[in-house]
Length: 436
Image (cartoon, rainbow, N blue to C red; front, side, top):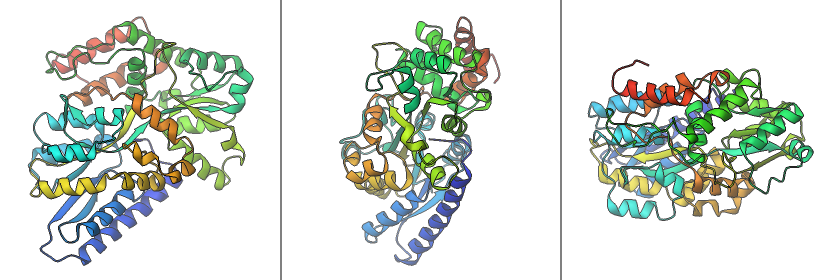
């Protein structure tokens, strides 16, 4: 899910992943006979985990097929562009695709995705967590298979909550976090940049307040109605505005994405942060490298995403990757067979431990090794049950870009006017009356 600029260490790991992926291709090409069907799996960049699973499933297929991986661009926008162009052109090599949940309606609506067979749908979603399942559907139909899921947690500094007297075993609200940051002259790790991370934040706030950015996301462009000019939209805008105008998100809030929020949280002014699970291995790696104090991990705690409305469950952000098959694939049956292998709970567990991407399968969290590597795994699992996808619409790119333009910088957001103006702008863009 994370699309922000990787750290130096992460860049090195991606480079290593590319070597692993290349090696996997070479090995895959050396074994089976020349007439073995080849399935191309278009993967998002990771630490080599998808290439490893491809090799394992190739071996398990015992000559029925072999999987070759092709790595997509790093950023989500470029991934979307490449996939859409290839599918629209009828590319027959689109056998298996790693898809970000927001891409799915745009690819499903014009028929670019092959239907998921009923037996495959049944076998691959027996214990899928609710949030991940919601992100794999379009118009109440499963159109992709959940592979791994992601969600944001509320991370906190133990020293800060101790001084504030907060009981983190109980739910906390955004208002409480803001009050603590004010009182202790601390800063909140949030993402205020004009980027996808702003849409992620706004959507979580609106959904947590009981609303939706789009009231009828399945509607045509001419008929879409937004839900921003509502109490939920204004509550979300109030939180963003307060943090921006009072400087509670740090001096770099206007350009701050996930990595920058993590660095802020790790510093002396850190207090609370909403962010993906990658921050845990990244923080520990920085400690091992001597870049951060040795005792910092002991001062970090985690819990569910903060509530917007007291007494009302939050709706944390949903990320992750689903697997789809191109409608023009020459080997759709084999591709679905391979996907059944890829998404087994055992592979999801291994992928979480080695690559840091949480499973979509509930049972994949049961392996003791998961909690050894990610002690917050039970909280991640609980969060994925509550998580809400971003607006599931074929026009997601236009909706997200419009939000980014109207809700940044955070300090300029006015809860009395911004939600209504943003909602109107989205509808004008979709109807061709305004340009992004």
